[in-house]
Length: 403
Image (tube, rainbow, N blue to C red; front, side):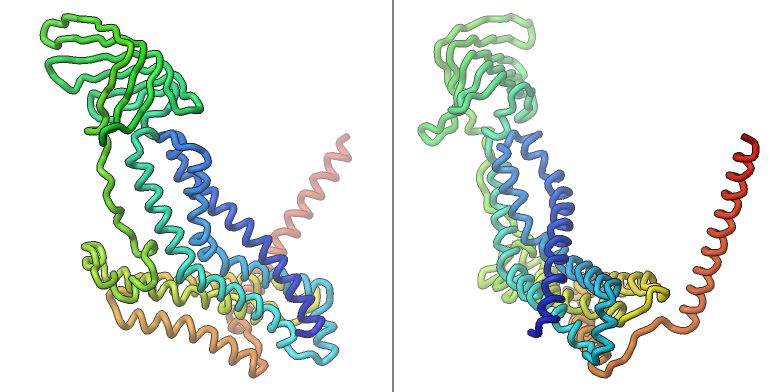
């Protein structure tokens, strides 16, 4: 790679890393808010919360990386043009490939990283995420240990604790058990702990009192105790294997439609498994397509009087159309062979078209009619702006004369 190409690559790579970090941060924040109930509703520790949300980062990276490449390419090409570096390169007789090659190298590295994450990294992380969520959902301690809150484990069974010590012991326990229509129990204890013993989950309470009320006549009896065990086993849901979605299954499972022993979900959703497989294989091509769109729109030197705003809008519109078409064809490819063929034709065809345009030294421009319409609209907006500025100026002069 030549010196100027290394220079362009460094600028583009820096812009890409900043854009990727910003986009991942925004998307991660939205996903983290969705999982906030792990802390607020189920009492999970913050470390567990951050672990759960971090497992979604590989998938989020795949989603935002192509757009980070697009932003980096647009920013780099705009900066090169603003600093007259594109003009100098053109005047020196350098080919367009001098500018395009480092951008494509960056896009290729991103595509390779996306392929690794799509085929192995993201499914593995999402699978572990599903397992962690399933474990949290059956963790009775996480549901109980919420100091200061009344938590209903099931109908007519309510728990409340005042505090939780670092060793896991509970302070100020209150349990209201009215599941039996004939007798209601209220347990109050200074200290309690949850232990596993004899294959059961027991709530061991110490130094407390049991209030026993008969429902028909309301008779109340009190029983003091130093230690009492409350069986929680019946309220602990059985640990069952989670049902994995297509995005959480390995690529090998997708290629074999659920593996040698597919479960009911895989047998009933073979089309979704096929869509997920081809989505994983075609998504890494998007950074290269996005880079070509950005280069064809902004890769040529222009003077300061030649607006680049419309070119940027055109590149973004083309990228949006490509991503929308890719998503639509991916969704339809599970049930349609035609959609599957169009998905691959679109993914590879855009790259082939962009390479052909660059290789033949062609220029991509808006149709003449569209360009004239946009120029007319721009002129009209400019005229309105000048007229408004003149009126504001006259109003200001009148105020000064009045004072």
